[in-house]
Image 1 (cartoon, helix red, strand yellow):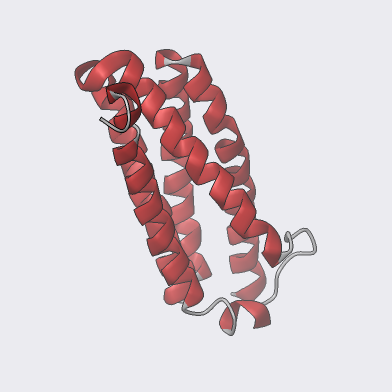
Image 2: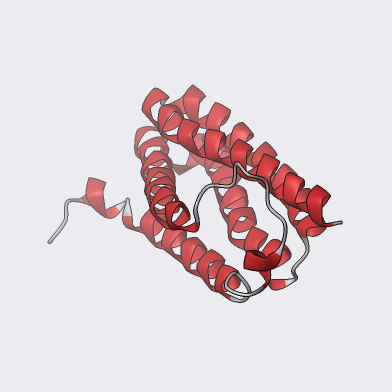
Length: 159
């Protein structure tokens, strides 16, 4: 085999996060260059060029953390945390659809609050299974908190 079994187990998590990233990117591209540039945003909005590198690191950390939990616990013992991971990954991929594709900061705000709840629950769950996995999710929690505040502020400024 080209890769040892322990490493091959990482690929499903890498593929899942890659699909989520592709969906999110596609939904974002629908209006980011027209609508988003014209709406009011707070002064603390990070430059657009920051989003790509940040999300690349966050998606890699998501995949690695999920794999660490899976590798340590196996599917049966990690089913709960990995289910939370899957749910937050789907919500993560769908958020740009609400915010960008539908051009709805209100729907984006509602969805991202739910998403952040799942990210926090997943992080706590990962922490209990594997400390390194939990630590890998802390930047996502911080970025998710920032993204939630930003989304809600954009909604408030543009309602």
